[in-house]
Image (cartoon, rainbow, N blue to C red; front, side):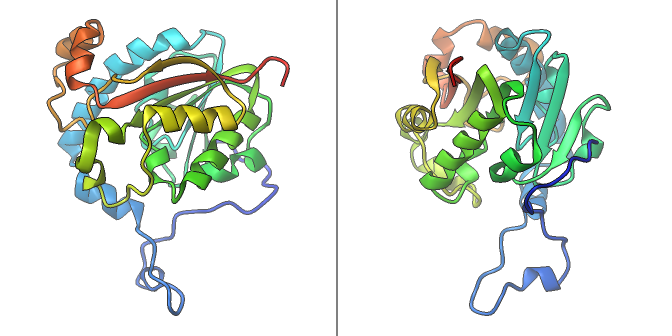
Length: 249
């Protein structure tokens, strides 16, 4: 874990005490992420997700140069970053998940919106988001998060986003209590452009919505799915977006 100087306070997950469950007068207490994920995912689910992500990481490796500096923003327990080969691997999350990450991954506990204050700017070759932007409170927050990613990427650096697509999912998008902002491939691309990115690749239909959907679970089936794009047209509900920070920025 890396301790970096903090230029501004960053948001930390509240400890699960009775006092923390009572918000200020007139305000509702925030959703506690630890409780949400414990309710949503069993240990068996985590093991299954890890097996799936080994294959997803194998596919996404094509977007990561071996000598790259990569940061996994809102990393959860590191499904992406532990399955990607890179010279310098970083991960951030609002929760303390350092113990779930490989020893060589530099972990910084911080809100994604504050990363420009706690990570080096113009530094990374790739910033990755997976199933994160929908948890932000507004479209304004989504745009701000993309601007933060832009600031920490070096010129020519890229942002890679795996994002549920409400146009493809429909009402099931709201089956998760912590989903707050809806995005399609077009609104995601528009926000990225407003943040300064140029579009390099958009795969509108890529992965199924959740690992509990009809997504093939066995690693060999996952590999076969990823190697057969026509299947994406049937099962793909998440969009994969790749944008680049201009080299002149």
